[in-house]
Structures are given as C-alpha cells and as structure tokens.
Amino acid sequence: MDLRHLRHFLAVAETLNFTKAADRLFMASSPLSRSIKELEHEVGGPLFVRGTRKVELTPLGEALIPHARRVIADVEALARDMDRRVREATQIHLGMRSLPRQLIRAVVDDVMAKVDPSAVVHLEPMDSEAQIERLLDGRLTFGLVNRPSGGRRVGYLGVLTETPAMALPDRPEYADLAEVRPADVAGLRLLLQPGATPLDGPIADYAEAAREVVTLTSEIIGGIATMIASGDSCCLTLANPSAPWHRYLAEEGVVIRPLAIPVQGPTTFLAWRADRDTEADLGPYLRAARTRFEREIIL
View (cartoon, rainbow, N blue to C red):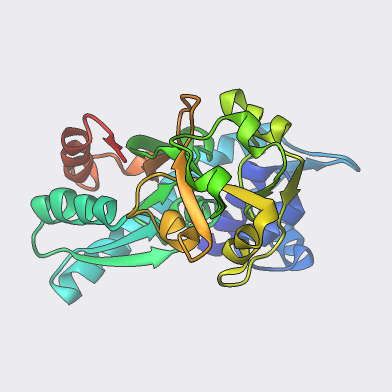
C-alpha cells in the first residue's frame, strides 16, 4: 500500500472537502481524486460518498482512519530516529509567528535545551494555519500559534498572554492620554491588520465607537504606521514595547497608549500533534513545557 495514498486519504478524511485537502497537500484536485480512487481499488471498496454539496466517509473509510494514522506515525518515527542517528542530534522544527524574543528564548532554552542540550532547533516563521497543517503532516515538531484548531489531533498549552493597546496619531489630544477609552477613537478609522481575528467582547466597544472600521487586505512595510501618523486612523497593537507588532507601529508620528477597558489580550499556544505525546517522543519536552509555563508569561 502506497504511503502517499494514505496521506492523501487522511487529508480528505479530515477536511471532508477535496479542494481544501488538495490545498493542504499543495496539489491539484484531479490527481488527488485519482489517488483516492486508486486507494479505493486497492482496499476493495469506496472510502467516501461524494455528493454535490458535501463529502462523507463510508464505514470502510471510518475504519481505515486509525490504521492510516498509525502507519504514517510509525514511518515518521522511523524517519526521525534514522535522522537523529545520522546527524547525531535531535532535530526540532519550531514554527513561530511574529512574537517577542523573550518567549522564543523561553521555549528554546528553558524547555528544549533543558531536555536535550544537543538538540538542534530550527525556527520556521509562518502563520498559525500553516503551522497546524505542518504539525499534522509531520514537518513541524512544535508550533507557536494564536488560536487552537485541528481538533483532537493537536494538543495545546497556553504560554503567553499579551496586553492590548492602541496606536494613535501623535497629536496632543491623543499623546496626552493616560489610557484610551472607546470614546477617544470616535473620530478615527480603526485599522485591522491583514488576518486579524474578529473583534468581540469589550474590545468590540472600540470598533463600535470608531468612525469606521477598515480591514486591510495587504500591508507594505510601514504602511499602517504611515496611515496612523497622517492623523485620521488608529490601530490595535500590544502594550509590550518588545513585541514585534508594537515595535512595528512605534514610528515617528505615532503614540501607543494602554486601553482603559480591561481586555483579555491575545494568547499564544505551544502546539504539537497529540499522538506524539509519548515518553519515547515529545513527552519529556511537554513535561518541561508544562513546568516552565505553569503560569503563562504576561506581557
């Protein structure tokens, strides 16, 4: 049985959508469909019911899932062990968003190096969605993501909570503020950076008070800061001066002030594929992480 067919099968089984599965696998839908048909021929029956609106697993498909996952996990474990023996060191691939250096050092130095000082850690910048996909297909060991997804196949541990703030034009009415109330942004456009999560809870009060909410679809270097400095826009950011998003906006013509309303800030999670939480694999690292981050870092 071709391992490639099993990977293709799991992608469709997890998304129940051939187009989404093909995107995850970086391939076109037609060869994916052909691969599934080849696997169905090999196992002797249909794995999916293909409707015009949705795809569903057949009982045979349901039965194949745990076997496919186990086979792939065993092959990946074999590949990791051979790689470690050849390189004479464990290779850890850590996905990361734009995060404070303090958090990256805590994960690398206080968790990974503590468990295995000889481990080689490769930092791989990418957004959270891409990290989850690469965790699931084995290309990442750990991820640092901003929202849980991936269902039960992915484990999570909160490691960082950041305090929100507001970036405003450097004008007296804003520069003199000790903290920003929703009413203070009434004459401004609230800019939301590309990929921003929906505003809810108390932070939604700022969106309702703003003159307009503008979700940006793309960003050039310095573009948001320039729009704020022009005098008619503001943008949610982070209070911690070492946070990349704070430093990115803290340019000439921009002031950053804390919010007046207590708001739960964004949380970063350490993520891993749940079936790797074993003593022979990631278990020792996860124990060290749970001890190190028994209380999340708050910045």
